[in-house]
Length: 230
Image (cartoon, rainbow, N blue to C red; front, side):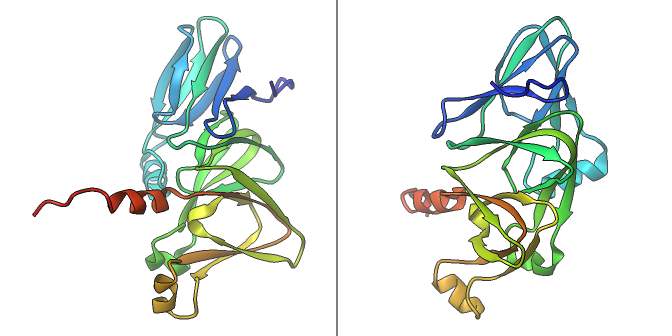
């Protein structure tokens, strides 16, 4: 169990690492915000309310691959719990915001303290690359829960150090790190014939989380076994 501080989320990550879910314990009057559809179970003392945050935030979340709406869970009738389950099997990791925010890629945001500010950030330079352009920026103070497809590997880069990660394997990185989206190979044809498309060139200092598998790869593999009509 984590989150002993009064300002921290009181959570427990269970059934990991392969099939992790997050159990959040709420005292009377406490709340937690989550991605729409993430709730697996909850106590009857907890009430949920859908939130949009305005048209601009709704549009930003859609572009970043999240649901247009988010849900606030509040223990209004006494203490209770909410269990959140990611859409894909893998790990759940808690990120504590302490003066430095995190950039979270499409589909990786699970839940957070209500005190955490969520916005949308975009790298328009490679807009037509089609991968990893829009992300969620988590800032302020509190805890953010992110999820992966497969296991999470954490990489810490020192100042001046760089590392290349396929955008499909990128989960999150500390805000303020340098990152540049580019083709995996020098030519567009070389990028796609190599099986790689767009990669992120990360620059330190800071921490990067990557996932060992990517949903796009699984979808492409399964598509080969689906009969096509006509």
